[in-house]
Image 1: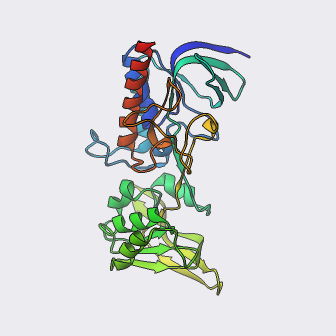
Image 2: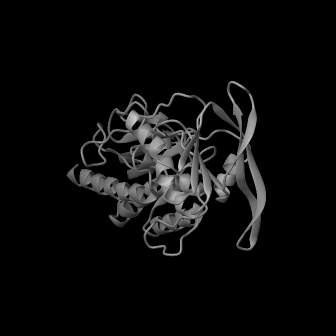
Image 3: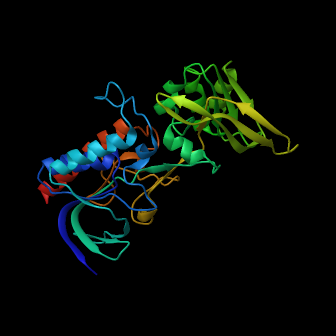
Length: 324
């Protein structure tokens, strides 16, 4: 094994939370080390699949998701952050310093650990789905992030839980019509959320329908021509009849999976796998280990809130180290 040595702070993850934590700990002269991930993980988090970000303060004309993450990283590097393009495979927190083992078998130790591993949106698994999402061409997993791009459009929401109802309700602020597609007649959504959606005159329901194929056409956006979603072919679970629902955009709202499997049995999690932090802090049950971003936030899931919690984790880690 090749030892990476002892460090004050290690940060696992490289989305808005991770880079913000690196920026703050770097400015505090803690010389943070960031493990930004490697395949199959995507360094930069979910914003690497976002074509345009218009709701992050400081970018009045918007910015591409990958470009934003590049700027986050550049700023963290300016203050001495060390970056490894590796995944952490094991965390031994039985004593301090904590021992982290990479997938290649290298070992690094640290006095404080910040977890910023994020979450991954669950997708349907259809052909073109990821391609169109990364291109910003009609597929999204975040209505709050992208709804404003679809003013006057007919939209589709996939899902049957509270998240789907909430996304559909939100999208009616912009869309002319929202069709909620669900594979069953029964919904997992709470009664109050379902009743609100049913009472909204812009929301229509297609039940017992399984998404079968994404329909696309060439569309010119600016100076570029690219495939764009124009509808979704669905198949009825009982009659097996196929039909096409026309739409200018589709929002997948079947949930997110927090990237926290590495910490199972080590840290407290809720029933969905989100890390549980103490009170209004980033502290986990183990002193010296902090969690931030979408790995512990199942509610807001925004770049700005992730960055804010990364700041909190950095300050918590700095104060912890000062006291030890």
